[in-house]
Length: 272
Ligand SMILES: [Zn+2]
Image 1: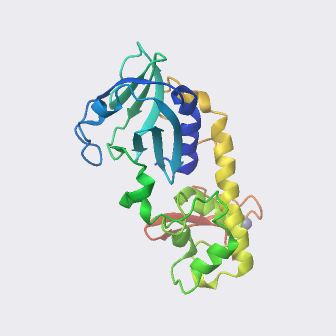
Image 2: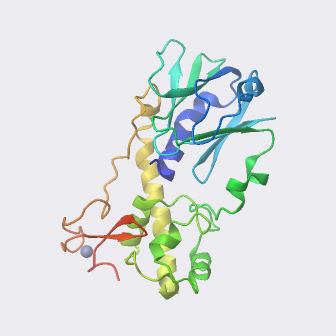
């Protein structure tokens, strides 16, 4: 599943091909992905000019003066830039043809992605966005905020930071990595976090996400005529997926446990 760094890198990769370009037409070859796709989307997008591409949580928002095209990659979705005569690939479900001769194509084998159109910004009134917590890389997500939100909470801290109502875009991989960096066990009860823990953890979340986005930036060319299998960046995970391998800090075995049915990895020596 693409996590926030992959989504951000997708945006960074496609943006130069979209900004200030006019949409000539669009083409949808499926009736539904995760939800039904509004069949008027293409009619509404024809001849519209794109102003910019932005992100909220893991939603990609391509917008112009009078339209907002919101895309979620779901489990297996990818966006790529293609050229006029590039042959369509299996599972290419949606394309925007631009006046530059390039196309934006959305590929999604498992069809858990979402595409929806609106005339107003979805951030204003779409129920998907209303209850979302702050962006992890924004100033609103900080130690005071995390300390406040973790009081009286009996759930594992890993679950708390993976809850989009608390903070968006921290998925299973980067939650494990951030907790290792902050030296906090993933199963630690949220309300027991000290102020120092919250300081360390909020900083670590930002650090692991920024590092992953930076790594992704160097593979930006993969988004042009890419095969759609971007996968995870060559991120040197410290704990994620490293069950029984030696901890980089202390050589103890990395342990794997389930928290809320999700695999979680930690070092019992380095994380308290
Ligand atoms: Zn260790």
